[in-house]
Picture 1 (tube, helix red, strand yellow):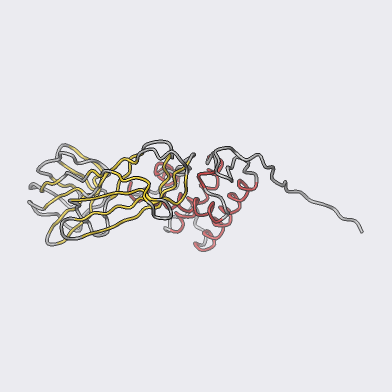
Picture 2 (cartoon, one colour):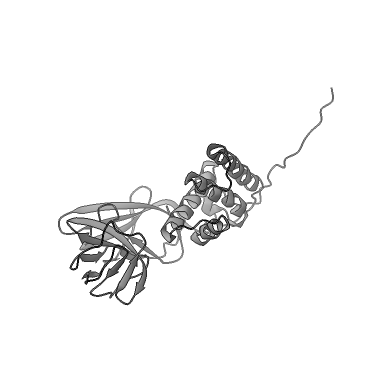
Length: 285
């Protein structure tokens, strides 16, 4: 799910990573939850189209031209009759280092094409949940459609955990992983936090400050790492996961129980409604 500020123009992008369709035509519409169109948006198609030079390895591609190639973007590489989706992690001149190595070195002449479409959503002017970005594109033969749920919000909740947080946590444990691996872990942690908030009946974007969830996020991070068999301690794996899951839930509930900076009616004003305090009573009969 995407979060876009309702009153600001915002860049969006999409790439077909499943089938690696290189689009030659594309349309994009922003729609309400009832499927009515809010706006039709102009799409910029990918322009990178080149081949490999001699000297490429499974990790470093030697491009004939690096014009338009950007670090972090996905590309389609055709080699030996197969299409591979690759992501550039570093670019030195015409030498493109990949985030993940290929099964084998590609041949000279293999085609290298861009996949990412980009567009700019104009400011909508009203906040609303469960809008949709609908991408429709084709390569002249194959048609595809992709849909992204998007909330047009006053306060984007943002990410509580970043890939650099994952790198720092791994370093404290003497573990090293690739940038892509750390990004995926951070995405999993942030997804879990948002899912927990929604399961508690809270829309994340209606919480004015996500800073108080940092401690809960640290437990969520350790839990996701444990699920990838990267353990904080040498304890039993299942027991460690269970303890971290309980600690994550307890910390999230602690923050939510005292969360007064919440815009429950989505009107832009924080609700002053007092929340019941926890306490004990003694009853004498």
